[in-house]
Image 1 (cartoon, rainbow, N blue to C red):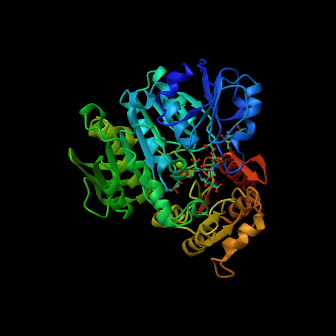
Image 2: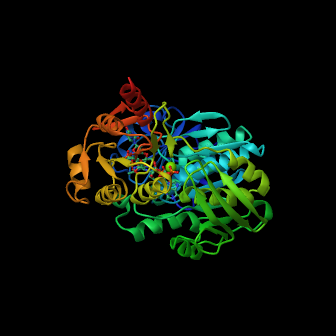
Image 3: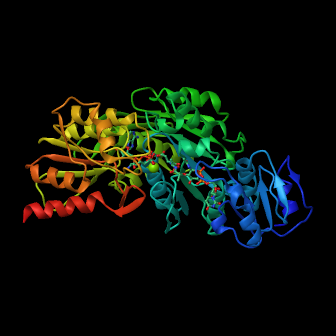
Length: 488
Ligand SMILES: CC(=O)N[C@H]1[C@@H](OP(=O)(O)OP(=O)(O)OC[C@H]2O[C@@H](n3ccc(=O)[nH]c3=O)[C@H](O)[C@@H]2O)O[C@H](CO)[C@@H](O)[C@@H]1O[C@H](C)C(=O)N[C@@H](C)C(=O)N[C@H](CCC(=O)O)C(=O)O
Ligand SMILES: Nc1ncnc2c1ncn2[C@@H]1O[C@H](COP(=O)(O)OP(=O)(O)OP(=O)(O)O)[C@@H](O)[C@H]1O
Ligand SMILES: N[C@H](CCC[C@H](N)C(=O)O)C(=O)O
Ligand SMILES: [Mg+2]
């Protein structure tokens, strides 16, 4: 695309050298900026993209988009906000790809990954070609790609949508994190359906307080378009049992459909029975009622299923088809995932890394456990410190034995993180074993028949971040090996 054509999408800019080079790509990372690109300078927390402008110009970049004056011999386009300009230009450069997709965005503190996987499965079973972007991976049909963030930046996203449209993907489902909403990573995404799971404490290191965190989540609903064409309608799917939904309803011009358990809702589950092998309930929807039995466990899973069912109904699928697809889902990688190695007790690996998710998972286990419950819990470094004592308190109160250990300490001192956790618990109510492998081995050595061991926090992760090192670590493998070692 020619630079001047691309710039017609911006309403306000200054340009020093009047030239019209062909722009062959847009880049925001100097390490990827080659010949013919438009390099967008972004000021981040760790780096300032403007500092790399000279180097990328020398490397053959065609033009630079910046907020500051830059002295180079290629055109510099100056704008007030490069982040906003990047979102606008990436969307234009790739031909507005999200408008060509049926795009479903999911936000909320917990349940985003699970709900998006449920939706993707149902859509695929119904014969739709799908794309998915989230914590575990990005998928285009059957192909899987690594992602650095749960919700990638606008440039990555628009490129991903473009690749999806090239491969004839019809529907894409993506997690939308609060960081992404604040940082404008999803500016330019034309969501057809936006789903809210729930809002409880997390990320207060970044958002500072719950009001700001809720405001961040609301941005998904306030940025939905307001076209009311049947083929391109916008719908907000809100959890009626979560008070934040009232605010989201106020800020959106989209139509709203509610789901819930405790409060009367458009899509509702009642008479819920939770067992160790599955969950059953009565489902009411605007298109009929059904008795549902699932292999997924816990009340929180019912919420995810209600959200997924609603999004799929709005995507034009048949209720019975949706429920048939959901019936055989056993779970999502690292979410309430059992480790089975011939032992006579239960070991569950779960991604609970917030107070609310930990509480939900432990309460669910208590509903079916007949033996003692051990919770192995840690908290991530360089993340919300205020959730540490809360998570420790929940583990100590709800489990029979709490073992505090390291999650991903990142650049923090692991022992200090554990001390922060211990603040939330009375002495003697727990043991602390900083080495995660040793903590898991200890729990397995102590286990008796019918006990349940919950290994929380890292779920699908196959690494542990200690300092700047990313070391191989998979709770499921470590647990399996520990079980086998004890049996020998
Ligand atoms: C705190 C935070 O959110 N940071 C995000 C932010 O990075 P940043 O602003 O610090 O960027 P930076 O690294 O300083 O770089 C600034 C600019 O210089 C450029 N640069 C940098 C180095 C270089 O050599 N050359 C160069 O051109 C960079 O490409 C960038 O354009 O923008 C980046 C691009 O979008 C993100 O990848 C990055 O996420 C970091 C890795 C991160 O850990 N984020 C977490 C907190 C996060 O976003 N988590 C949520 C999930 C949360 C949940 O559980 O709900 C997520 O969506 O992943
Ligand atoms: N609807 C829910 N409500 C509360 N807790 C949930 C819910 N769904 C899942 N959980 C718990 O939260 C954990 C994380 O679930 P999931 O990965 O689906 O959430 P997420 O929102 O994608 O998290 P992240 O912000 O890390 O991407 C699960 O392992 C489970 O313990
Ligand atoms: N998306 C979350 C994941 C946390 C997972 C947990 N294992 C940790 O490292 O804290 C975050 O980046 O805060
Ligand atoms: Mg996720």
